Length: 234
Image (tube, rainbow, N blue to C red; front, side):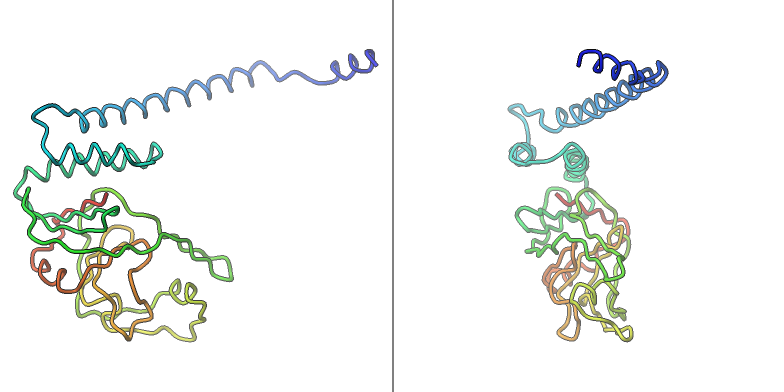
């Protein structure tokens, strides 16, 4: 038995030296990158969470919220970036929008002042798969963005993903007037803030991954919304 084991060990080739060195280099590079990312996030976190007697109430609230969150490193970095930029906006005199996903509240603000506040319904994050294998993925949206555009009085072609989500097969493309809602604020990657869709629309409720706000609230802030308007989603 010992001879057989020794023979088997002799037949098992050792990895070449170059492969061992390559694996060591890859491991070292991965470790260095992870360390760099950790240092970047630690720096942002210390900047944001540095609280003394003169810390503003908004900063203290953010510190407490972040402490309660269960986030991975990438999610935490997005949260920190958005919140740090939001703190800068508080000290400006620009109009901007904030959406608090946890509290499901939207605020339209100028500097520290809240000009309008409304409830928000958040569309479910999901992946929709068609019978042929095509997929559409709607992820939770977090971060700071510029408004891409806005629409009202438009014609909306019903997208394929909506038919698939509802288990229907489209024989032709339906076009619905104001199908996403009377007021639509476009964000990057086809995410939107919209008012409730009309009864004629096959979409009832918020678009997946997007945000639905009462029509009267979007109507009130509509004239102030431009492509310069920043949106902060936490």
